[in-house]
Length: 342
Image 1 (cartoon, rainbow, N blue to C red):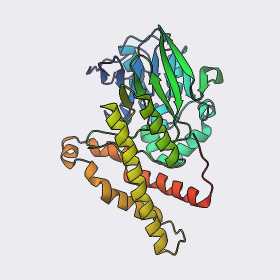
Image 2: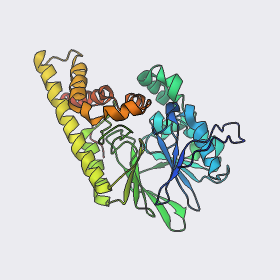
Image 3: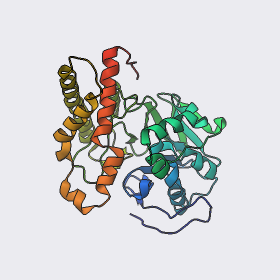
Image 4: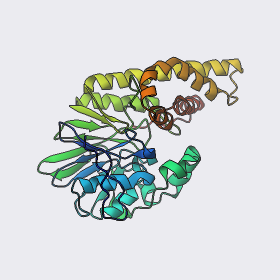
């Protein structure tokens, strides 16, 4: 791994972040989200038309831009910024990347593209979800000109040149605007949040089931599509590659089913205790049940060695956030308002 504290010449540049080149040629740029390493990765694919996959939030984007500069990327070099989805920990800095690299096209699912052109609703919703963290960790996404955005559908291809292509796969579940990316050259899949999260200190993959539009069946189908592709490697946004890929994807499927099963049992228990009348206490019971059931997935000894480990977990994948998404899914399903996607 390259650790470089150099500061770029551009006004938007900050200290260059940790950079790692993997054995398949993929380059990870640590976004230094929340001032911590190993939270969210951006992945640079070197090609005649280079592509960056993910960019992290607006408040840490200076480090990503500095990392690209450190790798020799001039303002005219970046061809694509590809976003798996528009949640601000993945896409919040997209407008800033577009400004720093004026020839780059921002690639995003057609389901979410309009929110990058006019991010007012996206920012307002994120501020409600993140609370005080919105101003301290994420920041607002800035608008991107419509002609800089390429809205893609399932099966669309990005030509990076020299025979290298990125296939865009519509993979909803975590969010209805989620895509996965398959790289023809490395055989790697970039899964965003659709396979789950594995941060330092975690002993296994954890699903990512946040509100407001988590959809269990769609999420399982998306994992199944990845398994059918038989990738050479799976890259998580949070954080890094998981190997071997077939084992990781099988684990992702199994863990998502298990978390959903445990959450549903707790949800039904809470409803039974109130005569099937929702009281708002269901979330508390589901969150506490998930915490008790899965707390051994976090190695306390590892957390003790890394002062940022618990902060990462609480920021990205705490049990209450997962519980909130699952409870909302159960409520929509039971009310008949759940819309199938994928």
